[in-house]
Image (cartoon, rainbow, N blue to C red; front, top):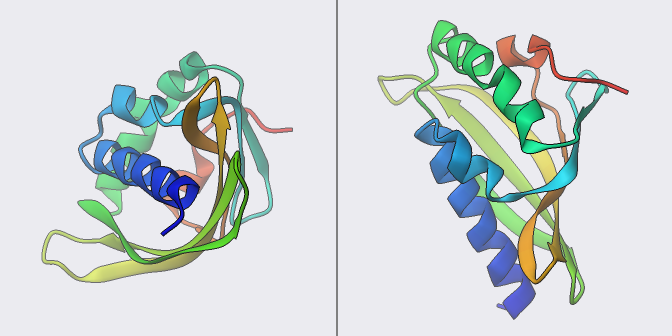
Length: 140
């Protein structure tokens, strides 16, 4: 596996571990700002700084709990484009209930960049539509 793909995947795995343990610092450590996301409802969400993520973190956690979420799994990860400072990873992710059943599977594309000699995600686009979609993040 090319080094830049491996580094992007490692960054993603650290982010996912932080997301599943609801560790906002671990998640933020894998992002580059401004950070953008094109949601499943085609809304562009923008986080200019880590403070923007932190402002809505507890609301997102509560909504995840309300829908019965206990973790997110990645069923498929593939690099579809790569360069020395940018990697596009396409994934299929699943939201999982406490009994291990999958309740929401969706496709997503993450763009990782190397900036200041650190790999992190800069842009995400997913087909996820659920309760957390309505979290009040800034939009363009």
